[in-house]
Length: 171
Image 1 (tube, rainbow, N blue to C red):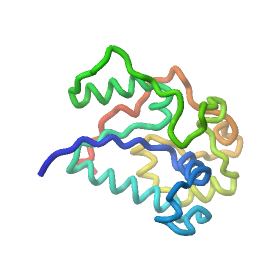
Image 2 (cartoon, rainbow, N blue to C red):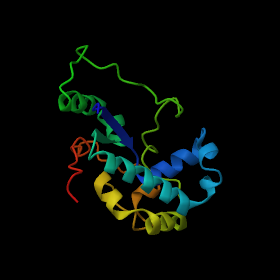
Image 3 (tube, helix red, strand yellow):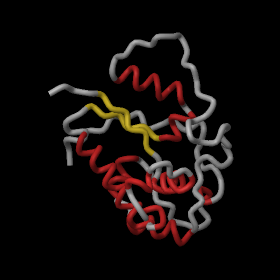
Image 4 (cartoon, helix red, strand yellow):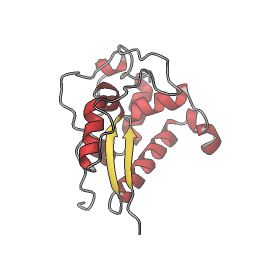
């Protein structure tokens, strides 16, 4: 069986729901009616990440937070390169200035907060899988005054934990 290397870039469930609602592309084709059903979106998010967690027992998977990729691009890319002993073709990386199918310029004041209402956040909190949040290293939004509901809540100087490799064999 050939062994492939995978990079899974993920968002928090709150950001993921915002993202697919604002730019559903072909999501509705595969999951008709799901965009308006938060419980179903939570199941889709959970099932997707459980699948990849389980695949980690058989494949070499590197999980990376989306916000780390945007904020610490060179560090994340160096982590991938080092993890798989890849050669760097150039001295520096050609850093992206925007993300395909996203706004042309990243609004750093709004990049990491959610547009979900507090009632919607509570539905997500009730239906998202706690183990998946823990594995992906996200926390619940538990308070309506949480800054993530309105403004960016990413500490630029905090060291990233997304470049850790997961030991999927241990349960």
